[in-house]
Image 1 (tube, rainbow, N blue to C red):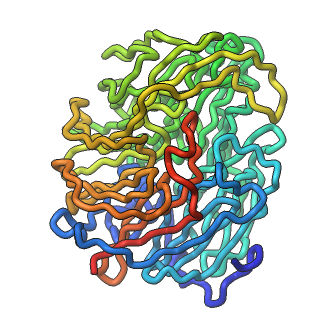
Image 2 (tube, helix red, strand yellow; image 1 turned 135 degrees about the horizontal axis):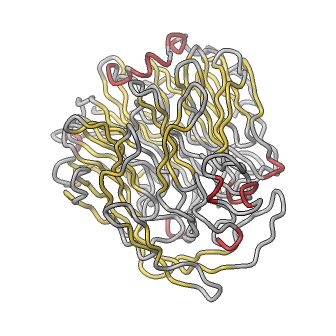
Image 3 (tube, helix red, strand yellow; image 1 turned 180 degrees about the horizontal axis):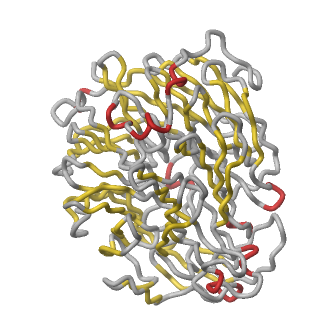
Length: 543
């Protein structure tokens, strides 16, 4: 590979100069591009492209791939993962990897146009793998949130740094793994590191200058709304990080962002109460970060179920709705104008507790010193990889984990920069995965496909009546969106724990999927998923 930050000759066309918040708000009108993390602000991961469809997907073949191997001090085989959602703008692809890497590629050939690497210190406290989930593009710049909590803006044509802001403290245990979100003339990012007893926050920066516009903390200090759900000084190390990219409704002018687990992770004796706004969704004003409403999925979370999973925005029967598959095993639909619960149903085994139709939560099983078997395990019934919504079928498609674990309490004392868990969880018993198609209005399953292992890659769905996702054993699959029939699969040779996308250049539709996974997943043995073989970005098209 070229030396650190060495630009590869040629550079990229100036296609990003005209990308704005207003253009991203109309992303569905240009399906040839994938302008933002989920493809559009609504988080649906749906494309209207249909050149590749249920009738011809069996002919899909590799068009090109981009390969690289773990390089750097913190890229160990047990922890690296190629998780990004590539961004495509008018024939140029921008994709990030681990160890601070970012590339601009020709989206037709895979030729590297430029490369950047941000220097990541050896001692960055990464709880759960050396990963980065993607970039944002706007105003002629590419925005990267680095593992050591820097926000870097690069010139989209050359890869040269334009500005850089530090927005977290790695000494305290903070890090960053999510893809930034461009809204209006700002870029918004959320912190990671709740496992270290940090106090999570979301920050907004000016696209042009990098000046911070605002910061919102997700755990309130005494006197602020929600502070009554904390005791003593527990809020100071209360977790509530925001490590998955939010969604945005331009008409309502609301950003919807998931908030992670409280700290310590497993032991509520250090933090009695519901612990707002952890394991919740917060809807906030993008201009100042002020909360407009919230909904808590798992009050007083002691199972590491977080609340960070995507919030998918869709409209049905004149209502503006939000769909959320929580790691706690329950599927929620909310009115996204005010946060009122519309429905809640289980979508996987959930012995930890019951959630009534009115949203009332009754915990049944908690971690104990001797160990208690609880479902789902610490990765949840659906980990961070995203579900998708297809407006043509009216169905949601979700990657599911079926696994339980022994949850044990362990004594813990807070020490800055060290794990603040208060327990542990070990997966036990039979484990499998599924892809499920679910009617959001009834919660009923339309079809499902079972795998012998957890399903932990994001889903992509298209107007070609297709559903795509990958498996940890390396297969990349396509199903019929209406029937669940498996129509096509390809063995990539690398585990898939990433975000497939689709785009079109010069009339040819492509499907892209990053592959390469060292096998890390909370409580699961790496040998379940095969040995790491480096990483590749596979891109497919019809012959």
